[in-house]
Amino acid sequence: KCLNSPEPLDWKIVKSIIEKETGPINNNFAFIDETPLASASIAQVHAAKLKTGEEVVIKVQKPQIDNLLKADLNFIYIASRVLEFLQPDFERTSLSAVAGDVKSSMLEELDFEKEAENIEEFREFLRDQGLRDSVTAPRVYRDQTTKKVLTMERLRGVSMVDAESIRTITNDPESLIITALNTWTTSVMNMPWFHADVHSGNLLVLDDGRVGFIDFGMVGRVGEKTFNAVSELSTSMALGDYEGMAKALLNMGATDEDVDVQKFGRDIEQVMNDMAKVSPDTMSVGVSGDGTVQAAISFDQNEVTDMLLKIVDVTEDNGLKLPREFGLLVKQSLYFDRYLKILAP
Image 1 (spheres, helix red, strand yellow):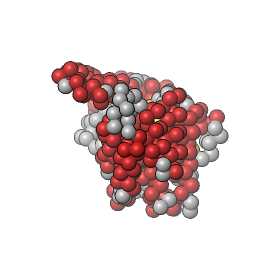
Image 2 (tube, helix red, strand yellow):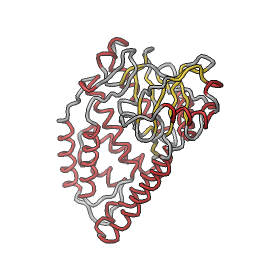
Image 3 (cartoon, rainbow, N blue to C red):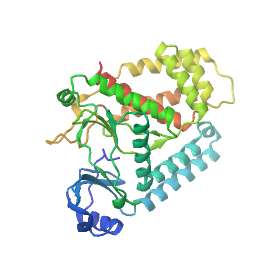
Image 4 (cartoon, rainbow, N blue to C red):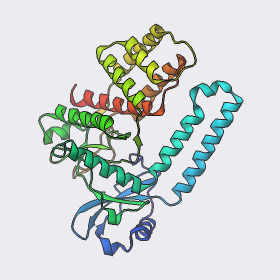
């Protein structure tokens, strides 16, 4: 989202939104940078300083985006139902169910108060797990936060994939990605939801050596059946047991037909071999002069999505329908796999 760079809103429009939502700027802020740090289709982000002195960022929702998005998503959902009616084979792919899930998830992202709640819950999780010395998420300033404006602490650091800059912060970059991965995995096991968008713009190494998680608009939720199957899948993956991976996916998915587990395992092995050939591209990292991440990715995010789609294609070709949360979990795992290749080759 905020890694995209569509045309930014004019400052006058942004100012009017902030003042409509939180009151006169001079009452709350000592300064707001009129040039956005990042701009995307849903929102743009501005650096600012509160009158009390704290450095913050303000995430401002673009006007009318809620109505436009609702109209687009409703059209997609209706179109998917029509396609399933006209072509019954599409029912096997749960096209309308996926469209419905995407609609619910994206509409939830438009509620910045919900995102603020997610951030605060994640901070509580870090506290309860004794992780605050090594991992953090931004503090939310509730008095300056509404459904359309989110004001939070500014975390200064570099992208998790900027290996060169990370080595100026620590001589053990491998430990940082392992800390990030362990934190995320522990959150999957211990929280009612998980961060479902850990691309490299949302995972930072801070100047003080801590890992910073940002952007909690997209989250996923895992049921017990899926969680147990993912645990089996992870174990089988670590052992290189492709038939075991196939059985784990069978335990997770729904199917109306018999599945050839050996063939399924061979198909998975082919996908995993293709994934192993993918090399990250660290040349795409972009960092500003003060070390703040502006728009940094280490590899084409479409590449990650393509790998995920290959996994989904293999499962569907073998007669399975997987729950949406599985796709979200696997996509995050693919991100972490890329980061490990960069920081712990």
